[in-house]
Every structure is written in C-alpha cells, then in structure tokens.
Amino acid sequence: MIEVKHLTKRYGDKQAVNDISFKVEKGEILGFLGPNGAGKSTTMNMLTGYISSTSGQILINGTDILEEPIKAKASIGYLPEIPPLYVDMTVDGYLGFVYDLKKCKLPRKAHLNDVCALCQLSNVRNRLIRNLSKGYKQRVGLAQALINNPPVLILDEPTVGLDPNQIIEIRTLIKKLGKSHTVILSSHILPEIQAVCDRIIIINKGVVAADGTADEIAKNITNEHKMTLRIEGDTHTAADKDKIVSAIRKIDGVKYVRADMEREKGIYDYDVEAEEKVDIRRALNQMCRENNWNILMLQLSDLTLEDIFLRITSSDIQVPRSDESSAPVIDLNVNEKGELVATEKQNGGQE
Ligand code: ADP
Ligand code: MG
Image 1: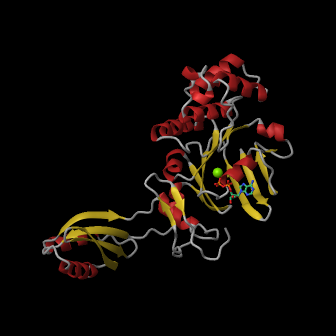
Image 2: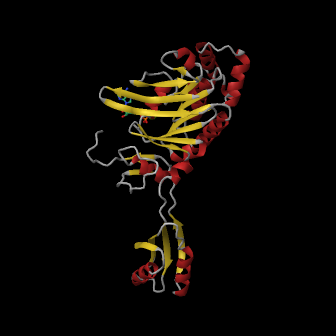
Image 3: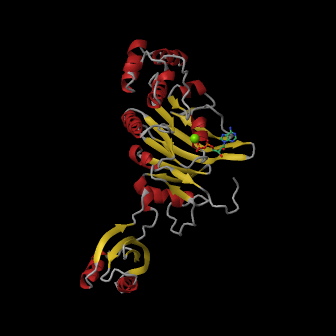
C-alpha cells in the first residue's frame, strides 16, 4: 500500500530525515513515535507530496508521489499538524469547498452527510469554524481528510492540544477509521500509540530506531528481572535496612540488592535484581515470614513501551533489534500525561 525507500530530507545542512525505509500494508494502523524534532512531520509532509524529498522514493499504491502526484495524492487524506481550516467558513461551507477542491465525484450531499456523521459533526454544520471548540475543529480537520474517501489517512499528531475526553473521542474515531483505511499516525505520546496502533515505528533524529509491534520491540530488548520491594522490618529503624539487605542477598538467584529511600516511617524500599529467568518472589516471601517482616509492596519493573522508547531513543545510533548492551545514561522522561520530555544529554552531538 505504502512503500518508502531510503527517504532523506535535508534543510540546508540540517538532516531532518535520514535514509528512512518502511512499508505499510493495507488496513494497518501504523504509529510514528518520536520526540519533538524527530522528523515525523517532515516524513509525513513527504508522504503526502506536500514537500519534496532530497532523495529516496515514495510509492502510494505503486504510484510514485513525485512522478504522478495527482494520482498518488488522490489516495491520501492528510491531516497536517496544524489543520488547514478556514475559520470564517461554516463547517458545511468549508467541507463543500474541500469537496470541490478535491474534484470529488461522489454524490455530494450523501457523501458530505456521511463524513459529517462519521466525525460527529452533524449538529454543528452551520456553525462558523472559528466558534468551535478545539476538539470539534480537529474533527473538521479529520472530516476534510476523509472527503473523497481516500484509502490512506495520514494524521500528524491528531490529538495535540485536546482535553482528555476529546482525546478519547478522536482515538476512538481513528480506531474506527482504521477498519476501513490504512492509517499512519504520529505522536510523541506513548500511550496513544499503544492504544491505537497495530505497529510502531520509533523515529529519532531522522532515523528509524525500531520497527515492529510493541511486543516485538519489547521481546528484543533484554528484560531485567528487577523489582522494587517495600519491607517492614521488626524495629522500624534504619537498623532494619542492613538486616534486610543481607537476608535478601542470601536468597538463591539474587544478583543485586540495594536499600532505597525511606518510604513510610522506618520502612524502606529495596531494589532487587535476580538472575535471568529466576523467580525469587516466593523465596523473598518465605524469608520475610521467617523474620516476621512484612512485604508491603512488590513491584516488578517490567519493560513498558516507555522504557523501550527511552532506551532506543537514548542511543545516537540505530539500535539493532537484538542489541543487548546496556543503554547509556538518558535524559528523556515521560511525564504523568505520558508525553515525552526530551532533554538530550550533551555528549558532543549536534543540535
Ligand atoms: P517532528 O514532527 O518529529 O517534531 P519535524 O519533522 O517537524 O519533527 O522536524 C525535524 C527536524 O527538521 C527538526 O530539527 C526541525 O527543526 C527541522 N525542520 C523542520 N522543518 C524545517 C524547515 N522548513 N527548515 C529547516 N529545518 C526544518
Ligand atoms: Mg511534528
């Protein structure tokens, strides 16, 4: 359906996209995940023929976007990062305008009705776009992309700036559209990609850092057998710490143990790492019972997509999928909203 080969874009000497290749099959929902500045919008602008590439090739349904732009573009509905809305038009006026612009041949009234119903715009069709909420404006942006029923939808950060309810609405709509369309969607919000996409391409500094399902990506990164425990000792003083640490250290399979912060009065957390494929939870429990200590919390540090993302994007080079080396120190963080906050380490790299 979509084939991208060695796509590169330079702005002057700035390499925004560097030799990206991937394929998207019919009916897939593909997520482009990457921090700001990764090259997502640049890639999408090239995919849609909005800007040209410096080198490389894009085939939409076998048609080269630069050689036969009109034919290729007819297959694509595009919602750019900033939706191209004319805010002084009514929803109906604007969608009618887009209908004409796209030289749509579908029965006008019925098609506009369908698109408005799908995007839940039927009750605001006579309103000026200017007066709509952000969520509604975004739905008008989606509706515009859907006119002429293109089989491919390209959506650049479609939920940016929306409130949580609006985000859920748009996500649900995208999922629904994914049943009948090939969708490429970009986001720097990890749970979003997880919630909506079948497949994920992680893009960082203009290169593909990983390509696969979330599970596949997870499988290819070694899983550490790490956990955090909160254990209540018998004296509720710092003296418990040393006793507990040495008792944990004696358990078979424990590779590493360290007392962490005091989390409740006189009660500490302990970071524990076991040998690979060794489950020490029962032994830990047993040991605590014998000492009259209580486990108040046990949290396995499973790799989430966030961890995967941080590991992959923290590396300057493209990480082979089977890379098992430990990741360098990173300054990328995910805030409580699940957005990626990238503060890159100054290690001599440009930018
Ligand atoms: P993303 O959408 O992932 O946030 P972009 O594709 O917008 O990233 O940008 C990728 C890189 O290219 C950024 O470093 C950005 O500053 C740069 N860039 C984007 N557009 C231009 C432009 N028109 N001229 C120069 N540099 C640009
Ligand atoms: Mg962007």
